[in-house]
Length: 140
Image 1 (spheres, helix red, strand yellow):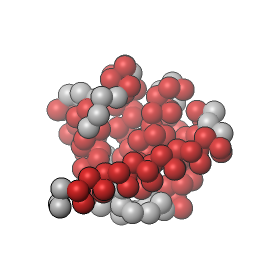
Image 2: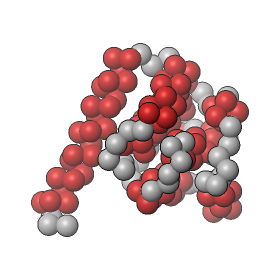
Image 3: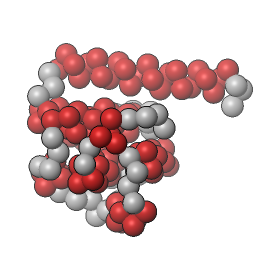
């Protein structure tokens, strides 16, 4: 929804980012509408070609392998995936243990410390609260 550093990644990394979001969303065995909407939004904001988006959607039933997917991501791309993955994991109202484990694995690969992860989770909570506050302001 907002301008993002995702657009500075090459096409292979942007595709892998979307694939990683599919992995995160489907890891708990339950895909909810909010997760699907966020994946669609991320694919749109990083300007993935419509045919590539269809490929990503088809992965929802059979997610790609985590190790293969993250192997093409740079440190910057891993950190962006961590940011978006944390939001994606929280959008349904709670973090599943499996989601937390995969976020931890991404953080480790990106060299992100636990203290930074704590700050990231605080940011996610703050961001979702602000979004909900705006809906309240507008009586939505």
